[in-house]
Amino acid sequence: MLMTDIYEIYGNIRSIVLCRREYLDDFLSKNTPGKRFRNCQGTEELGLQGKGLSLNNDYKSWTFNHHFFNQAILSPKFTNEAIDQTNKLFNELEIYWSKLFLKEEIIKENKNKLDFSEWFCHYTNDIIFKLLTGKRSYSMAAYFDTLSDEKTEYEPERVKASVKLTQALRKLLMEYTLFFVIPPFIRHYVPCFKNKADEVLKSMEFINQRLDAIIKSRREEIKKTPLDEPLPHDMLTSMIIKNTLRDDNYIHTGVTMSEAMRSMSDTEIRVNILDGIHTGTYKTANMLSLIVYYIAHNPDVKRKMLKEIDSIFQGDKMRPITKDDFYNLGYCEAIVKEVARIHPVVHLLSRCFDKPSKIAKYHWPADTVFLVNLKAIHNNDDDWEEPNKFNPDRWMDENFEPKKNSFLMFGGGLRLCPGRKLATIGLVCLMALLFRKYEIDLADMNTPIKTTSGRVMILSVDLLVEIRLRN
Ligand code: HEM
Image (cartoon, rainbow, N blue to C red; front, top):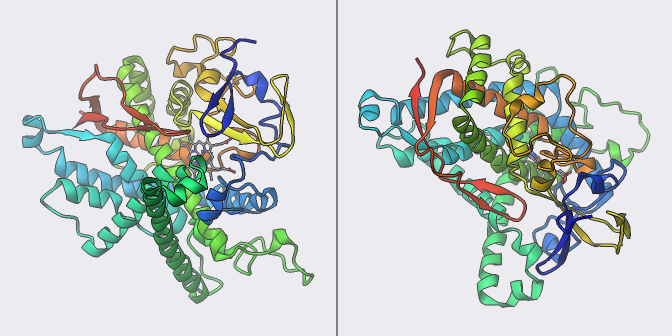
């Protein structure tokens, strides 16, 4: 065993970092109901204790939520909705870009440069919010308004309200770890930490109010919709109707309902929606930026990708993308996987077990925190041929299957990412829509990709690109 296969780090708590797939068998098994964090007062203060998925340490409640979340997000109707919304929001994005960056005089003056990481954050904000709540958000529109003298047609009040919510969500995402890493006494009594913690709690309260209002109004809309009329396929609607008369799979036995057969409360729905927004938005946006960066630096890959895209669209730069197109974009999907292998946006998985465990041949006491170093696992030359080479073709071989636990883009075991299908569809479709129509070059090929690193996730920032219409 090498020192770099397993090591420990100390912050406010000791964490054991695992860097080999062989150590993960029990850890990521489908039978191990691991928690992601130690139980702590912070989740209680945030109102998240035993709720939702990502921070839920109560196995029974997690199982209940997991079932609802998966049923909503993995249904074929939701997939169709995801593709439909991709087309609609991409069209909106194109309108903004054509006004801001594609006019002849702008190109002549060399002003056709835009920050992709920023645009993708706004795009994913809008699409994830729509798919999860059924409601529009106006993140792209608001960003356009800041860059242009001409304003969007949307009511300014709506745009403002949407921006306020997005900002609160971002604040929560960036600073909620304070509630896990800073001890309660410091959070409550040391002024600088207390101010920060209070701001996060204020954001949380605001988000809760807004999401509760959306849930309430959707319940009313559903009540008013006759039983024989179809409902939309967003996650909120699916969660509200599950295990009710509106649910196609509902069987009323007349016997007292088991826990699994009950419907969800507003608070349960709210935390699940918040979980989806939090865990989904920035990872997808960051992946998009990384994909654009790697494609720009690998001209052979770009050529092959364009060949695939062009063979499917046959020069048609306008028609909407379809589910069949997605299934035919195998090379684009290989690029997504290869970017995720070489540069994982989630760089650490975390787990912690209630009982003592044996991992990597050592015995560990209950409540030890383990972290899996994804970059190390994805770059191990025992598991990957030429691991440092960016080579999407490795995924194109029909017989290729990564070794067990050697590729963890979406994590593994019971806590595997439930948004994996949505994320893959979203990324592949957007790549096709972008590259079939636009020539996309990095503004500076010599600048390495800029990222900032959170506890478990990296954020791509300032990815300046130049766009033109493709001939
Ligand atoms: C490229 C985009 C994405 C990546 C790379 C990604 C990756 C991950 C990873 C690595 C985990 C941790 C898994 C583990 O601990 O084993 C996770 C968890 C999770 N992801 Fe994703 N994800 C993405 C998009 C999404 C989307 C779009 C959604 C939903 C809208 C989503 C919802 C979640 C949820 C709810 C969890 C917590 C699951 C649980 O604890 O049971 N993710 N994701």
